[in-house]
Amino acid sequence: MSVLKNIFGRVSRDIGVDLGTANTLIYVKDRGIVINEPSVVAVNTRTDQIVAVGREAERMIGKTPPHIVATRPLVDGIISDFEVTEKMLTYFIDRVHREAFTLLPRPRVIIAIPTEITEVEKKAVEDVVRSAGARSVYLIEEPMAAAIGTRLPVQEPTASMVVDIGGGTTEIAVISLGGIVTAKSLRLAGDELNQNIVQYAREQFNLLLGERVAEDIKIQIGSASPLATPLETTMRGRDLVSGLPKEVVVNDTQIRQSMTRSVKTIIDHIKDILEITPPELVADIYERGIVLTGGSALLRNISVAIAEATQIPVRVADDPLTCVVRGTGLLLDNPELLKEIVVSSAQEPR
Image (cartoon, rainbow, N blue to C red; front, side, top):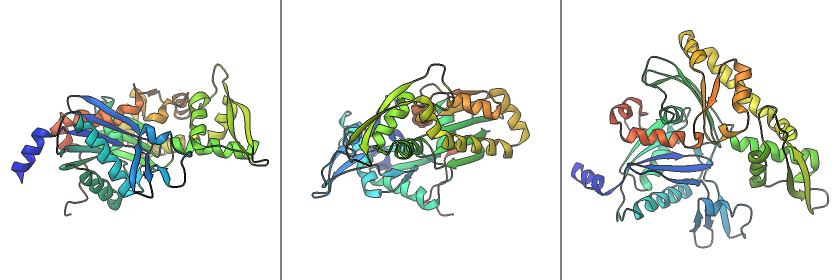
């Protein structure tokens, strides 16, 4: 068996995976990030064949005929459709190895998971990665991967606080000496903010919005606290009264108002974690600040809103969307640290 693993090891490329609700990113050893695509799969229900994966499939959401279904196989950071997730991962792993002319890819895979994941959910992640062709799977917690990707000193006896705001989950963690001291996994993030905008359009304008349109509005004018320069954009959807297309102009104040409750919930949970963190570590956090990672950390002024509420300096990491996958990539080259922080496998006997 070990001989086979050695052979596969020579012909396969070890990879790090950030299997996110909104986006899947893959880091290949010695090559960097090679895949950054939406976690969307379009399937033809008549033939059970994959029509498109990633960006191409995302463009199909809400625009397909009845026999083609474009879905997100992950909900709130958890695999909701095992078969479709397996097909998506297999497609991405094959694509990575196709470029390297590998006939039978069997890579070693490091994959990030939410902190408060159940044993059943953990096993689902391992099974889907193995089914997609991995010869061995290493699970690490998302905030730890994000901290490593941001090059925070995770092994030192000082506190690093990371808030990873993704598409489906917000991971809040305080890290010290290579371990997570206090953490919270919140199933509220970018997707929830999109839903807030959809709900606001329905209640205020009797307008039915698509989720893609809501996300575009959030990206164009969304913010967590008042902006120096006001912004506005058009909101297009279907009038719920007449059933006809309708367009209204909205500004940043209205969109911020629609998302206020969700942003406040995230901030309240950050405060809760600070309250249960040992005082020595809180002193470190006060001095070193909080680091925001994840795609939703790009929401305008989110760092300002958190800093005002906690009275602690807050900064957004460089390229926050790729922090988690960069962390898995750095661990591919650091087996000692990987051994220290890897999460116990659901397959291992207890």
